[in-house]
Length: 285
Image (cartoon, rainbow, N blue to C red; front, side):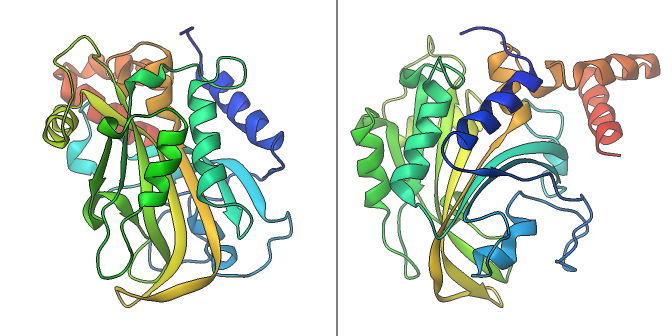
């Protein structure tokens, strides 16, 4: 795997999806234009919510961009390997066009292809899917797609809504998701079971790189009320985490995106975690 700077990751991502019929749209403002319930744009899908609910987008039904986001719900985790308040989300969307097979296939190809994507080792990928509940069935379809791509059943795990369901809040489009995790230490103890995976995740040995959300449900007042008029694909990957892996760094704060700010905070004489927190908040501001 070759070193890749953040600009090259952005360019490769947009080029990959443009070749597959996606219109490239600009990043929306960090101040939401159509959602008064939040202070900041928290995900690439948020500015697109009306189109996920059925409105026609002027650029078509397949879109991609790099969206600037701010999330404060993980603010107490800032300073570890992967969490930050500001980040850039590489995202591609299907507004009733394609669904699970294409979304998962393209995610996998971009992550693993040396020619068009990042060239990551597929043997280090671990996958999670939705285990099912009263609102939606177990996502066995995604599991079968992953297996058809070469991911063995032993590296596919099922979790509930806390892990593998996504919605922007109490109202709007929502649905189950499948997430891709990358093993940062494949020389470590083998990850053979769901419990092994949970332990590796808690220690940040495996980190989430990509998330494919299958938005076919609608939520109102915190409850899933039924299916949408169309099946949407909402997939996203954090640029900072991808840069961490592609640059061989131990955490996002050591990447070229953030390291210069961390270096500046050393003037304050803080410990390393404090430096990371200050750098993150400066970057977000």
